[in-house]
Length: 358
View 1: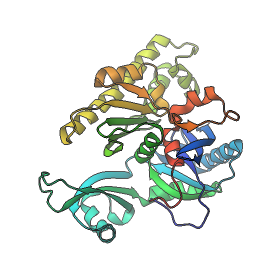
View 2: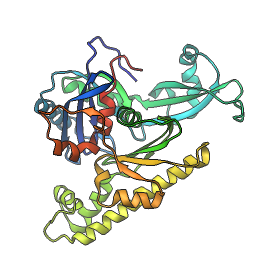
View 3: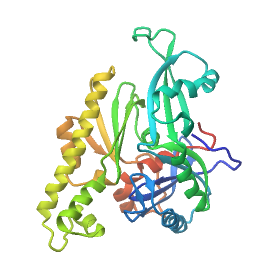
View 4: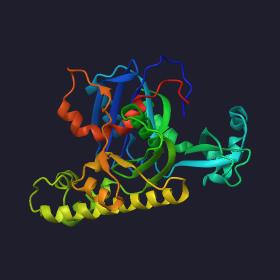
């Protein structure tokens, strides 16, 4: 989705999560990209809860601080949304032109959206005609339907504007992951890849076939659930629970007990991923998954890669959103990029967008 405006063509990506704001600015160089800016500002846990902004003033202040720290001069921003206010579905419709669908989409979409149709912004992408052997596929096409509640977009748009920025593109987290993958990984025609972004308040999954969207699911479990369990059981403040979650020494905290809690959380996430993969294989023409690429702050939990690999039977790796991004020899701490890279997946996917994109 995009917002009408008059401006030049530059922008930067802003991933506003419950746990942190991630800022990414890229420059197009030939067929690739060069990193211009990358910064992370950790947010206090009560500022954004389950994707809803609780204290806009403090989030705006954090955003302004991040922009000042990074010395960003650009004002145009691409940001993304996710969660229960976002609906992404593949639907089958009678074959028609894009212009005709633009006229009819509101009425065609109404039966698929669990909200009042007047309360959402709708976008679509025609994926192509259904194959003749698809049941009921004659003279029909497959369409990717996206609907986002207007109040969700307004909430984030107003916050970005209050920070002195111009929102020009509103994306969805799972599509930003897809853009990150396309910019950094070699795409093969028959490969099926699951992109799993595990944030503070939730997890987004996007399955790609040959680099193209095939399936998505939001999982209402994020890293905060593990934090909350550690806080509760050991009577810790949030910051100490974060340290304990990284298996750092914290007074009166049994590291082995914390590892057990982390293992339980890892198993819960892995089980949900298995369910999603099983559903995908049962409802698509693809009976295999070639690999899983995980990202987001909680993807770095000790043992998660190994446990997810064991439960799914699929090779699992952490995302490297800077895999094919040119990094200037000066101006970036490579250790910081390696450490924080998995958090940058959505931000990089936003930063590759261009003004005027659909």
